[in-house]
Image 1 (tube, rainbow, N blue to C red):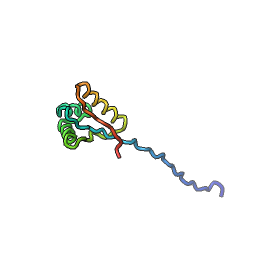
Image 2 (tube, helix red, strand yellow):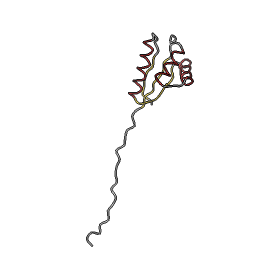
Image 3 (cartoon, rainbow, N blue to C red):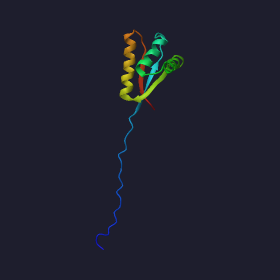
Image 4 (cartoon, rainbow, N blue to C red):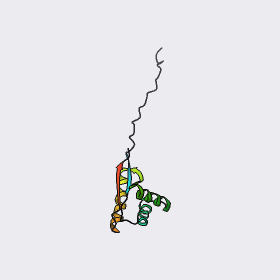
Length: 102
C-alpha cells in the first residue's frame, strides 16, 4: 500500500558542552601582612563573612596557603588581581595566586 511508511524518530545528538575549567584562588601566607588586613581583603574582595575570612586566613597562616574560592578562570584572575592590588596600595606583600583545579 502506498503511503504506509513507518516514520522512525531521528536520534538527535546534542553537542556535548564542555564545562569551563575551574580555577582556584589561593591565599599565600607571608610574615608581614597583618591578620586583620588579610581578613578585611577576604571580606571586601571575596564577599566572605568575618568568620569565613578568619578561617581562611588562619588556614593559610598554619599551612602556608589556603584555597579562597573556586570559579571560572577570568573571575579567579580578576579577584586575585583585585586582592593583590588592594594589598599593594596598603603597602603589604599579600599574595593571591590562581591555578587550575585538578
